Image (cartoon, rainbow, N blue to C red):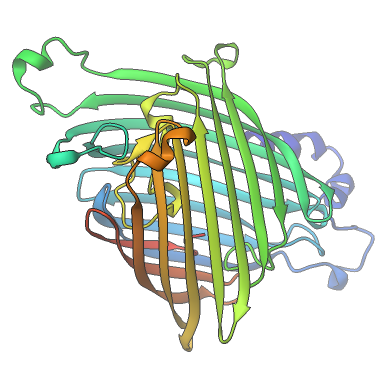
Length: 366
């Protein structure tokens, strides 16, 4: 959002230049210009997630064109509250400029989370051992990508996170609680490259193409971080029409260095990699996950999905073979909330290694 403000300020003195930067030539007749606003999704959304419980969120997501040849951009504003006492507010931006030669994305948010911490590794939570904690976090992550070849983008991203972690009052015996700090606050601040190959036919609900994404983050004290560490993420999505529906495949891997804080370890179940797991119950310094789903129409705006997947977490990729499998299977229902933007409201039921979970969210899982 700060980058958006800076770009607007630099061009505000020359409206004609600003219009051309957005891909609109002010000398063209008005009827020849692209329609700006295409649609808006406004929805109260029930929340169901094994990490934070059940609750309600409100989302407002307008879709608009910033140029006659540019794909849809969108802004998502959301706020939610759950049965665990967790709540959060945030805004996410996806901007497509100059016919999609320039992408300016990012998010800004605050969350107050109440959940259970199980430890690290694939054996976390064995015997039901866990500790209830409170985490209050502020995050800001803008990025700028430029098209360097056909459907290929390279750019730079910043990621700033401030997390305060504390044990819930009364969760430990007094003798132990007296020797532990009441809370720990860690600031992570760093820059890193991002490279993307994106041939999808639609950002919200792809039916063909692929998305390959490489991200890295280098947190360093020189950027205001309390800790120096590295994080790498590589993902690949593939979409193909099959009969009346679409086959969607996804693979994901994560690696962080030894000095990464607990909240920045590879979190199994985050970003729906995979569904059926409490986010953070399985966390470690290395992770792999793969999943497949079939998306099919049912009637009118209604559709359905069936999916399955597998993954692992480990101290390192070298020891991945020694860790237990983490499988996932499930099915879901879709309702098309916006025909123009192809945005679905989604409800999924998934079963993982430890039991079942229900998810309610906007868009597709990947």
